[in-house]
Each structure stands twice: as structure tokens, then as C-alpha cells.
Amino acid sequence: MSVEPSPDCPICTRLHDFIAAWRVKEPGWHNAPVPTFLPIGGINQVQLLVVGLAPGLRGANRTGRPFTGDYAGDLLYSTLNEYGFSRGTFAARPDDGLQLIDAAITNAVRCVPPENRPVGGEISNCRRFLTPTIEQFANLRAIVTLGTIAHQSTIRAFARPVAKFPFSHGGQSNIGNVRIFSSYHCSRYNTNTGRLTEPMFKGVFAEVRRYLDGIAG
Ligand code: URA
Figure 1 (cartoon, rainbow, N blue to C red):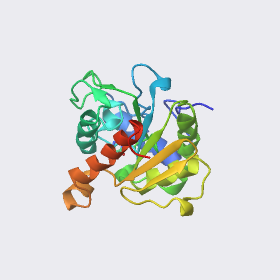
Figure 2 (cartoon, protein in one colour):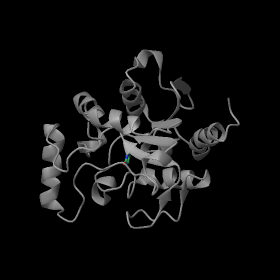
Figure 3 (cartoon, rainbow, N blue to C red):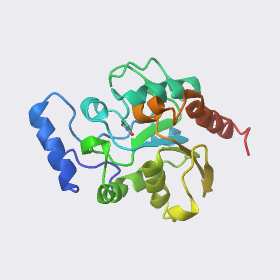
Figure 4 (cartoon, rainbow, N blue to C red):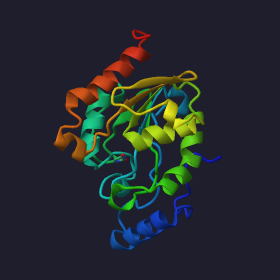
């Protein structure tokens, strides 16, 4: 099974048509499914996978790289850098030269949804790409899920019941050799309302770092 949708993926009619309309309005934008951002060394280097929700219209859908140009990307990329998961300077452009280290970033839904809200059928449709994306990482040890939708779709990608793995900010659960770390999504809404503070978000990645470095059990 392919890990990426085709550039003109027709599976979700609503998302396909939404993108088609934006191709007319903004022909210079990416306007296609946004592929997983991988480290330069390839899939075997990936120990940590970050799973977001879906590309933002004027962010990842414009630039073609997850969380790039989206408000949420500023906190995500600065946090990854602080905990040693990237090198270079994030400048919210796909040609900024930023490289991931031992980490990859993907989205539960690869196409931009209207109003940032994918519907249930779109989330389950796109799991046919999330599941093999996860499976291809032979050295994967940790996943950070950003928000309930990404969390539940990841649990389902492992064919586990979501009721047994409920979402909570800062929650951790093991599935096979992989530890799932859950966080509130680093969206503008969550940070502006104070639901998610910078220390809360960084705390999750601090735990991931400790776990990968073998300090935490
Ligand atoms: N941009 C992404 O690529 N994913 C999100 O979840 C939010 C913004």
C-alpha cells in the first residue's frame, strides 16, 4: 500500500473539490495532499513520528510541508529544535533548509479540509495512508499525537480500540514497541485560550527525549 496519496487523490470528494477550487484561485500554491516530512537519512532514521491533524489552508496546503506556514508550526518546530529533533533554522518555507533528526512529521488527514475540520469519513479514508506510513518506520519508538483526532486515528491505525487508549494531554501508552505520547494540538486556538501553554507542550517532548535517551522506563 502506498504511503502517500496521489497528487490528485479522488478518495474524499469534498476535499478533492475544495483543493480543485483553490488550484484555480491560487495556482502558485501546493494545493495537493501534503506528504510526510522525513529526515534526510530516510525512513530508517525515524525514531519519533509526530502526527498532526491536517494541513492548514494558507500554511501546509500552500507550502507543501507539514506545519510550514501554519501558526501551529512555530511552536512545533521550535520545540523539535530545542529537544534535538532538528537542525537549521525554521523559516516557515519548505526551502529554509531545516532538517529533521531521527524524526518525521505527518498528518492524520493529508488534504486541507474546509475550516480545518475533517469529517469522520475523511479521517478514516486517509488512514489507508497513515497506517503504512507508520509501518514503514522499522526503528520507530515514539509517536506524538497532536489532538484527539490524530490520537484516535493513530490508535486505529494500530487496530486498537480507542476506548482502551483514551486521549489525555501528557498521556502515554505503549503499543508493541512504540510509546504513544498525547498532546493537545499546538493550534492558535489552543495556545490563545490557554488550553495549551508552551511549557505544557515542551513538557511532552521533554518526556519523549528522556524516553528515547533511555532515561524514562
Ligand atoms: N498544519 C499541519 O500540517 N498540520 C496541522 O495539524 C496543523 C497545521
